[in-house]
Length: 482
Ligand SMILES: Nc1ncnc2c1ncn2[C@@H]1O[C@H](COP(=O)(O)OP(=O)(O)O)[C@@H](O)[C@H]1O
Ligand SMILES: O=P(O)(O)OC[C@H]1O[C@](O)(COP(=O)(O)O)[C@@H](O)[C@@H]1O
Ligand SMILES: [Mg+2]
Image 1 (cartoon, rainbow, N blue to C red):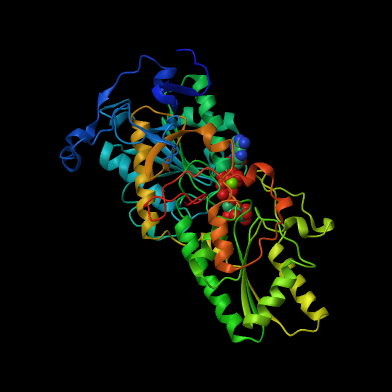
Image 2: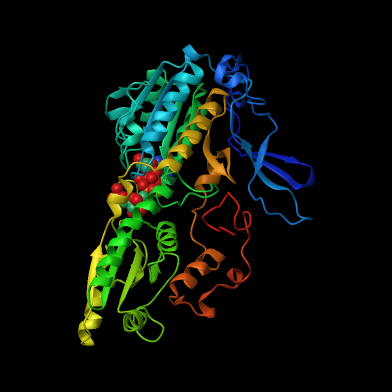
């Protein structure tokens, strides 16, 4: 058996400051693996497509807006089918697992991995792992084929079940080895991708011919590098229904306040985009933007003013916002099974605080609190997310068949790419409140920023980097849609 190679990032430097942050390949530690012609070259659907196979030297820039004299910068390997594959169809034994919280589109990704493996590559052995990482060693597997997954994209949730915690690397890799699995597809968020990374390291350490592939899932859109997560559009769309209801309630009552809590543990993207999409929201509160309640420039003063001006208002709150405002005794030190901090219900607390303020000031006010959080993530994905999930799943499969491993399949500047795990797990994607997108939100709601110049760190006062195209471009990364 070949000895495992270094686990240092694979970086390729080229002229003009070109950097490729490459992903591992099975031949990095199994150099003598045989290759086979890609069966897609005989597939009537693809054989007519000019340049269907991706050139080995194709890569996708992380930043598409560059200064004319600037370096070419970081690139990722372009996803897609390769001329040669490292697995014969009969040899492949794939498995799929879904981990972490639900997100619209999970079933679509499962369906399309199964379809791609079976229809494009003639793979017959595909297993579903039941109930997240712990399912590898604690539960029975679910055999998957095109028939089983035929209409699952029309359902919310995941047919495989999911869970938090239970990541025991040794037991998981033992199970992969014992079952003879050689392609592992892990659909999950930042925690799951960290789990995928350690599974990959252990597989490489053992010198196994097993491709480990991550597919990024996060309703919070908190995974870095990628343009956006699948299911995010659906979540924003679904949030509109709650905001509409809040608006109807608010308008119909004297000094009505419709108060909607949305998900977003550390990143307020759903709240921000739902607010921008709706136009009915008067105030959007997200974890990235600190605010305060009492006194001049505070939330209470703003709410009172807006009610006096308009007679009603709508507030949207991301669940991670204002956690620091709740009294110390309410602060939670509890964690979920994956180690994520369990948040206190800031929505209930804040709506009660607003009620108390108006009671104290003897002003009539009718607040209706709506918490659609779990309803939003339980719906099936919409049409655009379905297409996105399909491309993501196909890219993931092409990469594994081509022998790439230890990567997350993701959309970067509108192109499918393979991203090394460390780029996905090293940071979190957050709303940049000194960026233009948040400024657009502030001008659309006309809410106070709750920040003075002294609250903005020096380095943030400079213009943020502009990672994407100008307005009107097809591609739009949610962290900075400029
Ligand atoms: N650092 C880590 N190493 C290994 N596994 C992890 C790590 N962090 C999380 N996991 C596992 O990944 C799975 C999903 O993580 P979680 O944070 O609940 O959801 P998400 O993947 O959506 O962020 C859980 O089974 C958890 O045990
Ligand atoms: O109640 P659960 O299942 O722990 O999920 C709640 C959390 O799941 C999320 O929707 C998404 O979190 P993950 O991406 O880690 O799954 C968070 O916004 C929310 O705090
Ligand atoms: Mg997470």
